[in-house]
Image 1 (cartoon, rainbow, N blue to C red):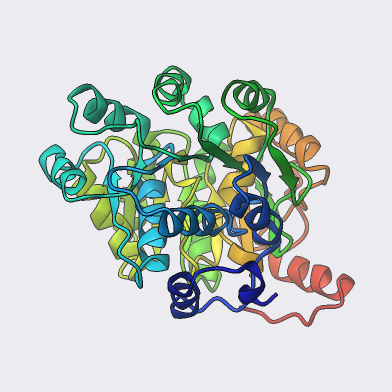
Image 2: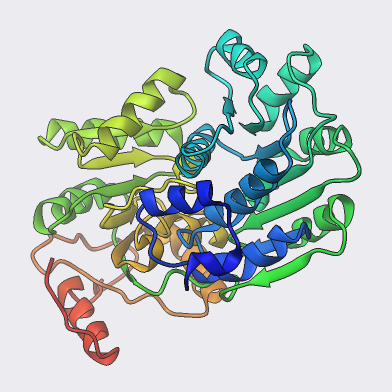
Length: 407
């Protein structure tokens, strides 16, 4: 759909062109027009569908039409990595304008952030805790904010940010535009909508639990103490451009990373016990494909936008079905294709059942024929899953009319 019909300013049209966008995604088509009108917007769409641009473009359009000093727009996000991505997208879209953006996150220099605010940042992209630090120390004023955005709102509520968010939102002017975007809309979001928004336009592009259509899902039942060997087998026998391996805990991420490195597979590691500098180095190495594998906790399940990720591996089955959808959404970005592999131990079967109920589909069981599965003592005989995943992808491709290409 032509961008010109939205009456965007030339600076933004040049930014869109420089970023290589050819057309709007469905969430952008529905969210941008009411947002440009100044309406509150509640948007729900699968991860990787372009929600960031859906709120950044209207935000920039408003600031460019009403040029005033001070912080005029605030974007709150749950994690540092997502904040950095939103800030980068904002800078890219605003590159042909004079709009300045400040990144306010924990683990980075407070002094440098305060200096960026003093130099006239009009947009602030922040995590709640560090934003409150600046507000309490009076290095940041919020009385001039005219547009507020809660990105990945359900994740912020899950992470316990609601008290901080309430303090921040209550410090903003009453006359403002509020946009809220998320991949899922649980009941807690509705309570936040009632509290912070006024008659929002509600947009839901996909069923709330639908993974991206280009993702092929596979499930590998295996004994818990054989997971690492099966992961290594998958890595060595699958053509992987790059992959994110999700674990449930930080210590587990370190253990898996050490195991892969001892077998000659270089990895980057990302979790909240790492310093900001270590997290930055991990992401830079993974984005630059210096490391083919990123081992991470759910800190990377939201907002990680790396287009070359071909595979997601759930080393541990997530406890919550919503987290499964977000994890596998790291591949198949913007309607591309990818593979999502889950390793399921016997005691994790109940979590898989909950996931399948949530997404409304059964995840095909798969196996590598030559992998030495051991028989659990209480199951006789043990029958591992029967579909090798290359054959699975071929069957899915044929049934959907697509041409199968072994990657």
